[in-house]
Amino acid sequence: MTRPSSLAAGFQRGAAWSVSIFMFVPGEEEPHVGSGFFIDDKGVVATAAHLVGEARQILVALPDKRVLAAELEGLNENADIALLRITPPPRVHPVFGRPGSLRVGDWVMAVGQPFGLERSVAVGVVSGKDRHFSDDGELMFIQSDVALNPGNSGGPLLDAAGAIVGMNARTIVGPVGTPGASLAIPIEIVLQVAGELRRDSDAPARPRLGVQFDDVPPLTAWSAGRPDTSGALILSVPRGSLGEQLQLRAGDIVTTMNGRPIGGSSDLVTALLAWRKLSDTSIVVQRAGKELVLGRE
Image (cartoon, rainbow, N blue to C red; front, side, top):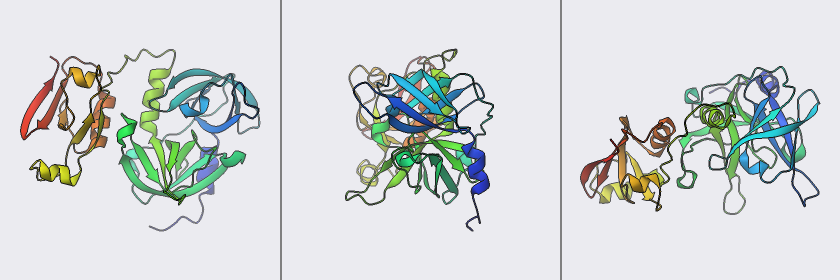
């Protein structure tokens, strides 16, 4: 793939809906600094939930140099997504890309203020898609080699044209501080969670399976007598979780959920995000060499 001669036009476009966020926490002299971006033209800003914490005051610095007080509209700690609202709303019309159309090797940009350096851009390529980690539950990530630093969290990941394709979340750092992999939450998940957090939302609460799961390791598939590693491996089922109510067990391999084939843990994330009601739930698993259908009628 040929590197574009410049990504300046894409940066200028995407920077128009990127903001800096300052959070003042009681007992701390300096504010926490992070990034965010508008998700509509009504003054709603998405950012990372871990930035907000116990902030007693939140300020948002706009591209036009204005600084406005923000109100916390909603927060989902599990998804690490928070919604802020500012008044009056600026005249912005953010454009969203489609993470599904991104290819490994495509150029992406992170806009934010690393180390307090406002409106900075870092450039890299998509290193992987649909990354899921067992500790992150119903989340998956876009992996890139974009250099994320303190101050980038919550800011937008842009494609080469400047459309928002994700929210920068964190970096996995090597064991001796070597450069790691940067992770961003796909914008489709950000917008779905944001829709659930809005005060005027009439979206019903989604069921939460509450289990840990991951891709099926090759040796696990081999030991189970399976010809491939398709499916999602259940690692743990906490007491009281919906997973326990549905009779899932650690070691089960989920192959289908509500009619959706599960090729890997990211497919199970997609199925869980689309899950709307507990009734009529159907989960097909392989357990001890047998296929079982679990669920609620």
